[in-house]
Length: 449
Image 1: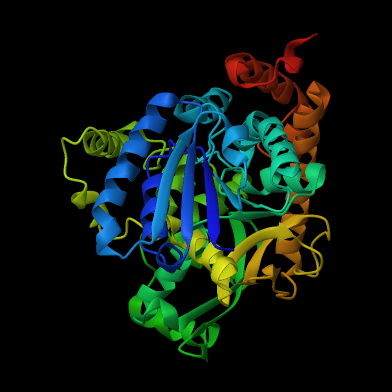
Image 2 (image 1 turned 135 degrees about the vertical axis):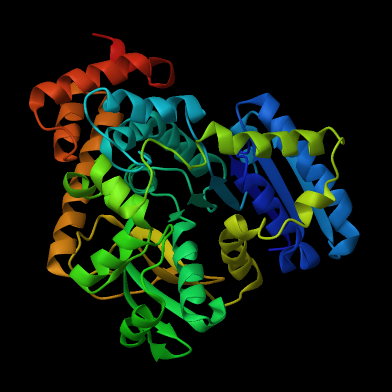
């Protein structure tokens, strides 16, 4: 494979697109192969900004990193971009920040609190309804135009989107999440060793996965953890009090951080009292969907694209490449035939976690090489966690069925199976309210009757 073509769908992303571009430009692939990166977005304005940012980054880095042959292209027509593609990465967000805020603000009017709302809860369900039909269309295009390509999905809700693509079109698909890298970095800091000396083996579903085993410099991490907690105490932050309370109960660390794991247990944690006790915000505060946090990033990227700000400030920004680095190394392992341990691949179970449904999409480590992505068997989850995770897998299946059929009754069943609403009447009223307010981003079939 001498000529590599990598597509980024949803290239208007504020953080991921510059991160991916920097990671690709600094990679060994860029030194040894001809690489084409195609940016695709339906919003021409944001596409132009990130294309301008990428072009200026490339002009600066071409000599700095010994780049062989690297091209950046831009498209608003994804079918045109998909020609001769090898890897398609998705960071698509249908409805953008406006729809995401409706996902949490409308349920709030019904007494339902969500922290992020991009995975479970009414927000996660409606996010699935907006994305799944589009993702199935994209998968059909991939099958028809570049059938041997890998589809690598970062878009949320990651599990049902990945499952829908696999279930409906059977293309080569893997869901990827940056969350496990956050836990990896946290454990590195907590134990005071470099990240390379930590090895994590997780199992579960995206945003509700559990560290079944981990090692620190070759030693069993769970044997070292009690003493470390005694010395350093319970940290405050993303991996904070709730993470360690759940460890005390289940004997395992949840991988995705307090805010995400709390949303899978709404009856205990999706309330103001728990938010204060465990120190995690509600209603999208301090997330990438927070306009206050987005504004300076937008200004920086627009300035760089317009050549009124120095692109070097972005290229030299510490940690810029980290968000996209995992997928760059994964692709590099396949292209350059290297062995790479990827800590959290979202794939069809097929026995990787023994006591979860075979057909469900689960998150486990994988070995990656030129032959592809090879999930590792990690054993079983404790029974109580397997039960919650299995319940969620069937709830996701209902959401997928509702999204594909545009069936209001299936949507009601999905909301009831999700455990956020407390009555059928509330589920019906909430469904109608959200269908109406998010109408512009949903398929017209929802409104035929």
